[in-house]
Length: 271
Ligand SMILES: NC(=O)c1ccc[n+]([C@@H]2O[C@H](COP(=O)([O-])OP(=O)(O)OC[C@H]3O[C@@H](n4cnc5c(N)ncnc54)[C@H](O)[C@@H]3O)[C@@H](O)[C@H]2O)c1
Image 1 (tube, rainbow, N blue to C red):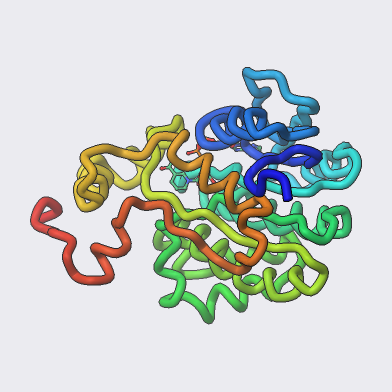
Image 2: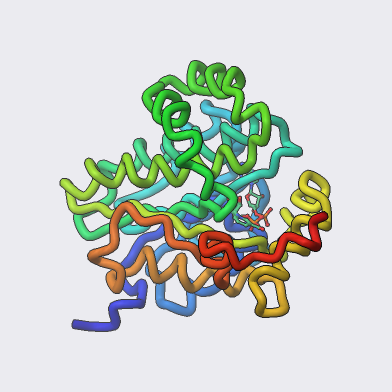
C-alpha cells in the first residue's frame, strides 16, 4: 500500500510558498518525498524548488500566464496565498477568492482522479452561515471583473473583507467539491487560527492586538500557532490518507471554535 502520507511520485503546486505557512509546507513536502514542486508567488522562495513561477494573483492576466507555465499533471494543488484587508477590498477578494477559484478551474482537467485541491482558508471565515445568500450569489458569477465588482458592492465585504473572503472560500469548498469528486478529485480547506507569519503584522494592524491576543487566550494552549503547526494538516489533507475526505473545512484552531460554539470563551478581556 505504501505510505499513505507521503508524496512520492506526486507533482504538486503551492501558491504563496515563499513565506509563512506556504514556506513551511514546501519544506514538509520535500521531506515527504514530493516528485516535483512548483511554487507560484509574487516573491521568489528562499529555498530551492523544481519550478518557480512569478505571478501576481491579484491580476487575471498574470494568473493565466502562470497557469500556462505549469508543466504536466498536478496531483495536488495547494491554493494557499492570501492577503489581509489592508491590501484593499478588491485585492483581498481577488487573491483570496477569485484567484483560488480560477486556478482550481484552470487546473482541474490536469488533476488525475485521486488528486486533490487544498485551500488555506481560515477560522475567520466561520461566519459564512450569516452570509450564505450573498456568497452563493457572488460565487455564481464566473467572470473575474464582474465578480470583483459585485464583491465591492456587497455589504458584508465592505464591512470586513478578510473574514468575508475566507467565508467565501469555505462555501466555495462545499460547492466545488460536489462536482469535482465526480471526476475523482477532492476539494477541502484547512482553517487555521492566528498564525505567527509575516501576515500577522497586517492582522494586528487591521484587527488590533487585543482581539488577536484574546483569540490566542481562548485557545488555552498558551501560544499562537506557528507555520509548522499548519503545514502538516495541509499535507495530510492533500495526501492519500485523506482519500475519503471531501468538501470539508478543517479547523486547525486548537479548540477556539469549540470554545466559542459551546459558550465557554471568556469575553471579559475584550471589554
Ligand atoms: N497568519 C495567519 O494568522 C493566518 C490564519 C489563517 C489563515 N491564514 C491564511 O494562510 C495563508 C498563508 O498566509 P501566511 O500567514 O503564511 O502569510 P504570508 O504573508 O507569510 O504568506 C502569503 C504568501 O502569499 C504570497 N502572496 C501574497 N500576495 C500575493 C499575490 N498577489 N500574488 C502571488 N503571491 C502572493 C506572499 O508572497 C507569501 O509568500 C493565507 O491565505 C492566509 O489568509 C493565515
